[in-house]
Image (cartoon, rainbow, N blue to C red):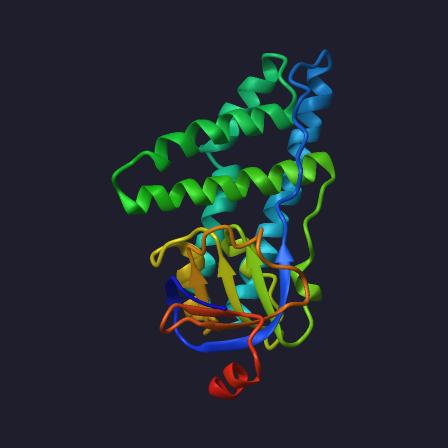
Length: 238
């Protein structure tokens, strides 16, 4: 089955699908009676987040995407300096759990930026959502699929890619990426082009229609993807 959507990074890739699932993050607990404990949890999570982010930026530099590594450096700055962190700390001081404070403050800015007519600010909403998801993952001890374990000849599929996710790619292992969301000027698209990874975004209901191990062809130049290609399609793209 062939479909044509939004090609955001040129080239053709063929391989077996690896689904990158969204993780389930339980932030139902909102209040705490131990503010000091939550402050310590938050501080430890921020430290781990910043260390991880620095390592991701270093990997991108080694992959030849030094300029794009700045995208991740900005995320670390958000949590190290006078940006998101002070508001989160203030909420914790009012008896809110660390994870709920992270979720609440990030959602506030995601909503503001996502509603902006400026594409640049809408992209910033995606960056803050990535900060939110990774910080919550640390606080709750939840980890998503490790992209670094992808074998040679893998097509990555996700609802949406972030620069942090793409920084985990081992050079030579991934032949293309496809996603339900993301624009041509998104940070993930910019990074895909820098890494010379064929990419097609804005594929409706992608994750509901694919399984791990299925073959797929990704043509980032034309925006075409082929689900479970037959021999004729394989020959066409080889």
